[in-house]
Image (cartoon, rainbow over the protein chains, first blue to last red):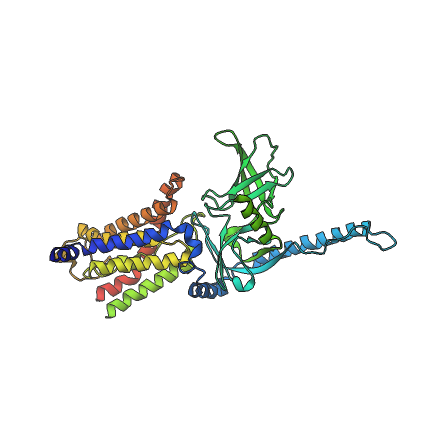
Length: 279
Length: 170
């Protein structure tokens, strides 16, 4: 017994160091279970409050850019309304009986949110939003801003949520080329925050620079057709089986502040169906 | 007691500076200074090594929790907390060290800067290797370690300017 005590006393520093290292590495390698622990994240109550205070100051920094983004989006929407209304008029004859029934049911709606914490310099970046369970946010919901997709909700507490953005090496997003519907998965390489890569596109698909990439709607995260970016460059992958497209992301990740979480009507149903099919 | 208050203030101040300001900046898109370890570098040399390790761990963990990187900073900072005293002894003799403050003006022959450069380099290398882990982008990794170390050292140089006069008085 005395020997053990003497041993512990002699090596107490090293043992303590090993213990602290073990705790650190445990936290690090349970990274994927991170979704289950709100305690060690920016979504816990204290951190959420701290970042809300910070955002109340820094939120003013990008106002000009945000305003321009909102104006641009407003313009686009007004234009679309005008186009749709004129199209609708064509389908309405003089007897005022609409030949085309406009679908009333809302397929999805948007929950507005503000970014209170953001990072772009890591390999695995995260974004914290000021909305949580109380606002109807659930894990695996998609997040967009005025320009394009942002990411997917991973962790939700009562009033905050953590989003895994496109700029996270561990996350893939199902996307497609708008003009020919070829789907692939979008992934970031950790290098340049302006570009991500669309992989697994078959080599026979005709691609040209400037083609638009949108969400495929193949998962319950994003409905079909949300803007992702444009093709900047492309090359055949090393094993020559697939094309690898370099995509210029339409979202500027270092200047996002107003985002929307997508509430998708058939989301639960779709998820349940997919789970059953997977069994 | 007063000298502890000073260290605690640096601890809190550096975490706030790191998480709320510097983490939002980036030099050429991917490099950033990691300045919070300065609080650990200046931690008094005559305090029990266990306490220094605990201090390092808490420092790293605080930054981790506030930047969604569980364990990474804690691990790297615990490591340099452990290596701190041996590194210090590499450049300064035991008698010379005593219970003096660790600073540019109190350690002779540029020992402070040798000690700082070595520990910052170890810290950044550990941090970025843990972050990358798969070594999938080793070019970026090899670039990140020296560039971020340089940025960090510029900040530490500025902090030393704040402390130099105070150290001379003590």
